Picture 1 (cartoon, rainbow, N blue to C red):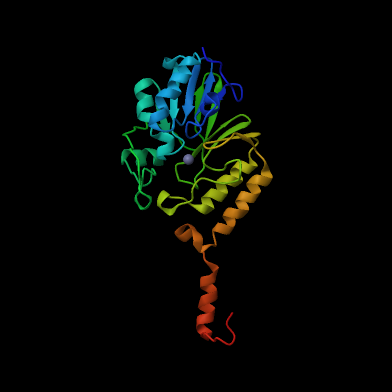
Picture 2: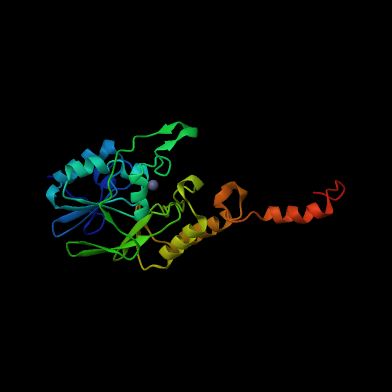
Amino acid sequence: MLARREAFPGVIEMNYQARQRLGCSVYLVHSQGEWMLIDIGFEETAEEIIELIRQMDFSLAKCKYLVATHADVDHIQGLKRAKELLPQAVVVGHPDCKAILDANDRILAYAEISAQGISIDLPPIEIEQLVNDGDKLQLGELTLEVWNTPGHTPSQLAFKLDRLLFSGDNIYRDGCVGNIDAHHGSDIPDFIKSLERIRATDVDWLLPSHGPIFKKRNEVIDATIKRLTGYQYLADFGTCAVEWPLLEEWDNELIKGFDARTAE
Ligand SMILES: [Zn+2]
């Protein structure tokens, strides 16, 4: 039997368990013999992860939920294989995540970025139970509160478990956030609201979907909110920006005309 490397009572992160990077964070939450996974990652590691779980002496028949935090291929590609190995587990996700997977929308799922030559297999995945903000997932004696935290993508979920927040792609330890991309449905004002909600909540730890688990520090979140607030007015972010102040300056200057003697 493999010793369980619990990050917190009832919480094992599978990259930490393996002591090597497998892909995105894969959180196993367990209580009274029942367990669930928050994301599974790529297909090529799904079997290895489930084998590790078996070796940690969890009953494979007691997996209750397989959760998709959102529809990005690096988080969910392994769900089809996982469901084959854990047929009784219910695949859980947000309605927008289900819509992307039902449509096999390779662009919204980041399986296809043709300009960068990225083309990844997106197997058919059925979300069997829809969850949305305010819902609860019951596992043994634990209750996970479902949060919808749009910004990176409309379907982004987070889960609050007492003083822990499984925070998805909202923020990482270095203050970076999940990719902001118009083709992915990213929304900077929504992102800021999600970060403000995370800042305001009474959790001690953030358990992100990439990178190390870290303490919630408001000064880090503040710096990220400030950065994203600035993004809203930068042409760098194209249609994700809400306004480009230079256009108004240009409007005003067009009325006067260009004069090289006074222009800067
Ligand atoms: Zn991600």
